Amino acid sequence: MIKQILSKVSRKQSRSSKNQDSSSYQTPNSSSSLKRSDVGSGNSRKLVNSDISAPYSVSSTTRFNPSEKNLRNGGPVSASYEALPSFRDVPSSEKQNLFIKKVIMCCRIFDFTDPTKTLKEKEIKRQTLLELVDFVASSNVKFTESVMQEFVKMVSANLFRELTPQPRDCKILESYDLEEEEPSMDPSWPHLQIVYELLLRFIASPEADAKIAKKYIDHYFVLKLLDMFDSEDPREREYLKTILHRVYGKFMVHRPFIRKSINNIFYRFVLETEKHNGIAELLEILGSIINGFALPLKEEHKLFLSRALIPLHKPKCLAMYHQQLSYCITQFVEKDCKLADMVIRGLLKYWPVTNSSKEIMFLGELEEVLEATQQPEFHRCMVPLFKQISRCLNSLHFQVAERVLFFWNNDHIESLIRQNRKVILPIIFPALERNGRYHWNQAVHSLTLNVRKIFFDLDPELFNECLLNFQEDEAKEEKMKSRREATWKRLEEIAADKASSNEAVLVN
Image (cartoon, rainbow, N blue to C red):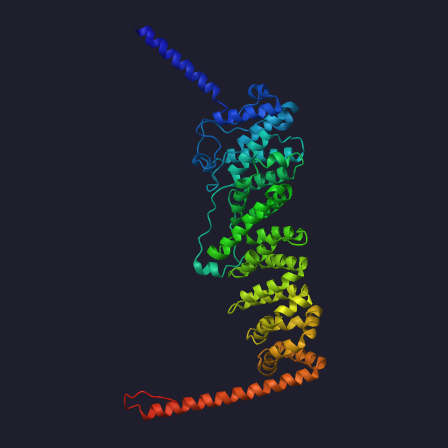
């Protein structure tokens, strides 16, 4: 009986030891992926029996999954994290296998919130990533399907994480200024930067076949990449901008999806949150994309202009991305001058009422759009346009009034105004006359007199007619003012007489 028990125990121990030996490097998932890679590379036996030691043993519960806490938070693993040999120290036939091992090794995520924690392991990973960058840059690596699969897994594990925004008060958000506010720097940037550089070199590499890579650089990968644009670290957003642009250029099949996904980010930003850190970078990418649109423009692109770009003028934080937005809008008008009417009416729809600094930005963009506007489109929108310009001329904020008066220094805009002076001058003449008489700022006063002189020299008859109409309207207004004052005076007298009684006062 005792012999039987001992024999069973010995059999169990031998089985467990075999299982431990077989799981010391490969997991069930990784073994299948390695087998698939071996079919493509033809060296499965070399990968298993090579003398290159694994970075650390991986159990089935510690597969490189970024959602697991022990990896994302830099928790303990089952064995030591040791550096692998350099690419220079192995024969050429083993470099591909070593590349895969180094990629798998770099799936480990460390906790950078504590700068004193796992310093040795962090430095090993950093050096390994730098080796991978140099190896990819040297064009020695052949990106087979298995290599791409492991590579994209590693990139996803390192880059795609939950972003934690800095806590800010609502009042601070309303007056948020990128130039004054210190940007938030990600503490894990020493590793993130190299991973981004590695991804950029991978996408730019001629060895990465787009037909194979699109299986792994798929729609999900693009969406996660776009999610990272909300990072508060400007260095990360700069890398993302370059990478997404390269992805758009290399993977033609993804182009409509990328444009649609960026549209959705804009819709959510304008209609829901008004909070996003990467709008400027996304618009910068779109600027170059719009520049490459073929003519005639597709209806899809015109809808993008009207539904996504023009409403971006609405949020309070326009200053964060206005330069890039203005460039995109101007690109559309230069591509198709018939869009000028829609753009100008869109600007008038979102024109700020109480925000003078935003109004100055609108005027600057309006001037750029008008430079690309032709006579037919200008003729369709000039009446509402110059009603708004008239209000800007009378603005008490001298920079607003001054900025709009500078329009007459632009030869193309002045030419449009000259050709349509019979419609425009009657609209803006009252504003010019009031500025010439009452405006407090000397620069605005002088510029107004110059504009009045331009119109007078151009068409004295029209100018005098407008002056006469203005004087008549002024007389009518003065008469109405005196009648209003007389009515109020009579009302006060009646009220004083009946102050002692509770009778209601009726004024005819």
